[in-house]
Length: 72
Image 1 (tube, rainbow, N blue to C red):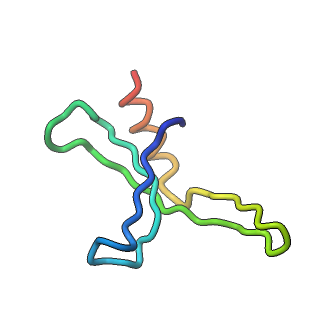
Image 2: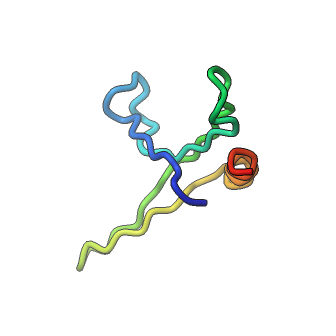
């Protein structure tokens, strides 16, 4: 999946526990009810060099279904 939106909910939203998420809109052309699916992002960081890997945690099947629908 390419060109997904990354959201930072940790600073401006009321619920600061969500942190970074990735989002797919199942119907991006819709004005309302875009069928948004989100998944949390987690990271592994090397303490020696700072290399960072970011992973998506959960909802991978739903993300893929909505991504295919939006990119037909």
